[in-house]
Amino acid sequence: MSFPRNLFGIKRTPNEASFRTVDKQSSAEAVHKGQNTRRRPPRFFYMILILLPFLFFFFCEVFLRLVGYGCLDQQWIEVVPGKLMLNPEIARRYFYSNTTFPLPAQDLFFKEKPSGSFRIFILGENSASGFPYLPSASFSCYLEKRLKKEYPASKIEVVNLSLMAVNSFALRDLLPGVLRQKPDLIIIYSGHNEYYGALGAASTLAAGRNRWLINLRLYLERFKTVQLISEAVRVCFRIFRTERKFKAVSEKITSDQQIPYNSSLFRAGIIQFEENLKDMLHMARSAGVPVILGTLVCNLKDQPPFLSSKEVVVGLPKAIDVFKEAVSSLKADSITLADSLFRYARDLDLLRFRAPGQMNYVIKSLAQGFNCTLVSFDSAFDSLSPGGITGNDLMADHLHPNIYGYMMMGELIFKKMKEKGILPALKTEIAELKEKEHN
Picture 1 (cartoon, rainbow, N blue to C red):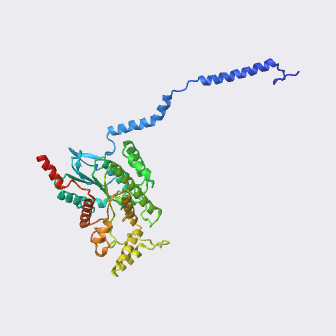
Picture 2 (picture 1 turned 45 degrees about the horizontal axis):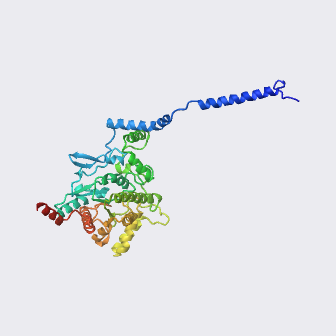
Picture 3 (picture 1 turned 90 degrees about the vertical axis):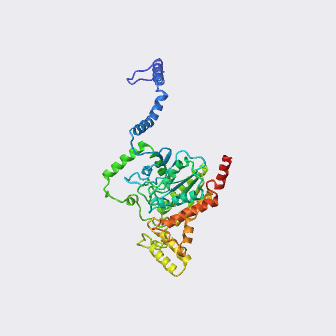
């Protein structure tokens, strides 16, 4: 019987081979046992590792608030005892890369809503603020005077929160804070600034074109740590950029100035407006607050297109050619044809300072879908204009009404409120209550 040899040619006995096998097994078991008996870190150690970044940002946020860094993040400030107004620095959230930003109207309202009062908030852009006149020319001021004249015994508050050069992103951001103030009515007039307004589809202030990311960024901008990071990014950008430093505010927030009709950017502005407005109507309905939506008006008859294509786009005529054809049709008393051509020329305009017709379609469809009250400003302005087409008779420029136009908007809202019964307590009811208290 032969036995296996080792490396040196020496034969190994069975006992020797078995002993070596046992030694190897014992060594492997010892190593395995040593690994099993090695002390593992406790579970809370891993929890601390996970929580460290959050703790860092938490203490950083606390420190920045203690030292007073950044702008005021609250939506309302108490300017006089018992009365609030919109924070004048609120627009920094939307103009985060600009050193200048618009200021809101200084409309005050009671911190604690008085019993039996009727409170209205107005959300919008330049046109809702009364531009190019003083805020006293806005339709909100006319509406407040009209309500107080009709219901002198009622406590009425009309608070205009409109801001220049903003759009539906800013309005959506402000609405939750508005709903916490227990409004009886919200009026929304917006849509002209969806392209060039801050955070708009063609604005340099937009964090991309993802609506979810933009709304998330607006929420995070309330935190001082985020403001610090944003400021650091702005400083780095100023150091390394090579473009000229001095620009007008409107130029600073405008990126892609030319927006062809029915292009991807054109559609992006309409989609962001529709989705943001839809979110706002969902919030208002959940809070049980009625909303009035107003269709948009602009100067059709007396405002030529700002920018017409130099080259003929496939399937589309030049905006200026369509406008000239509309003028000729109007002179020939072809009112219906002229009206459609003026609207088509507006939609073909490569500069989107006037909202395209699709915006009013969105407003009307959402008003119907959410059972909101709709005020058709565009139809009313047409009916009040010579020839049935809105022009300089009611407009101060391309999209802002003149003083008479603002007054008519306030009157139209008041009539619609009466029609829908969205009004303060009637004078007769108040008189009856006073009589009961007296008796």
